[in-house]
Length: 602
Image (cartoon, rainbow, N blue to C red; front, side, top):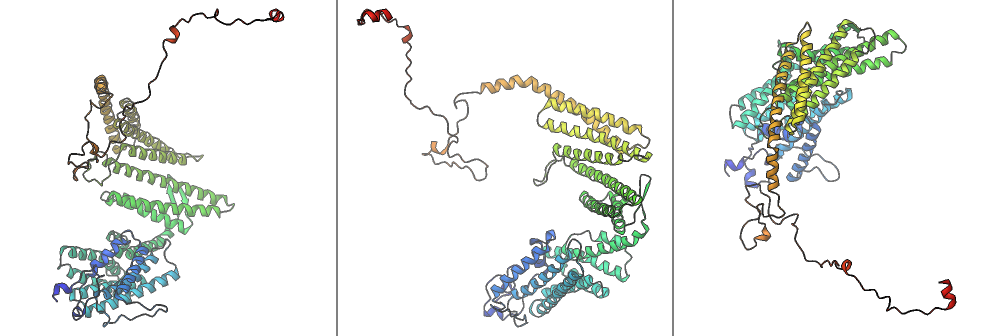
């Protein structure tokens, strides 16, 4: 047989068992990296669902056992050893590969628990990783004797990665783990120079996925100048190979925050200083403040909007955790009034900061929606913003500002900082009302309601002028907001003029349109174009379905059917009855003879 017939694709593994002539050739070929990436992407790991991928590996193994007749007994389970002499088909190598993947995905599923694995679960997790290393080593040894050189190299890199992952999770032997990851990277770098374009791209992606783990190992050994916070920027890539790395980085950041928590004794807000005594509250507040630095730092402008939204979600989670801890402390405070006052003040301060960040996040959503409002839809899958969506977002902003203002004004003795902050909330509320009214007018304009749109544009302009005057009257002027309000004022004036002119034109053309519509009214189908249907042209060989390339409805029969005149019994109306004068026939009536008594009482 030729070489072309010997090589099998990575996914074509369910073929019948090869005959004896093919079993003579000992060398097989399989693309390990492509098989791994395809299986992971198509069965759950694109969304981080390790349990689903584990179920797929189990189902795949059952199919392979059945097709290879490599079962382990009927009643009693008896494991059959996978020896070198057993591998007479490339599918036997797939069995070992999926055993490795199943053990690895089971371990990663335990790693993804909400509160992290406890001591017992961690022991089980490391046991599954050891099992994965065992199967990966067997896979590498079998491939070295039964496959070509490329497959053997890929299997060796795969086994090195699994061994490095085990040591990475164990937090020990960092030099050995670094050597394993470097060995895998060197193999993929070399393989990325050859083969087709798809294989080269896969190898380069794999090298990039291994870089964060290598840097972290060097950081633990002391051979890297990178700080822990800088390692987070390296691992921004998504992929299954980076999940363990991200978990380690997050654990290291938590440890660093726990050490810094001792120095966080107070929480400053609007001139108040609230003591923070609970270590959990300190860690949560420090975590939230780290996310705030990412959003307000010098590199914040270069961050994409999706990344900012993700950071905001993490920030909200941290502040909510802090508030939950504070409220738990309030429950257990008892009758200590001073402690309860401090905790209530801290809860109010954290809630106010959370409200401010919520407003900032919703303003970011408004910015994203505005960028898509007037954008032409080049891609059919891309969603275009409607004015109603911006109205809904500004409703949320108005509710956020109202809640924050109520929270600030809830105290009795307020400082000047609180009064100034409340006034700022009122100014923002007025600006948001103007924006909301503007986009509400846009939605009415698109619906063709000119009078309502004109009135709303005028109202939005009035609100924008009021907000502009208030923002210009303060000492610390917000130039960005002032420019936005000036642009809004111009837009309102221009759109109100357009709506006014359009309304007059439509009113002038209304009688003409009405006369045209009335002129086309008919009681029959003679004024309209009569379309022929299949029942009307049975003698003609013409398709009633239409061309396959055109989107035309099939013309089989009219539905609902048209009205038809049908015969019925005549209606007889007796119109002459009231005009006939009938003769008096009293004389012809028979006279009745009555007696004397009847005449008296008649």
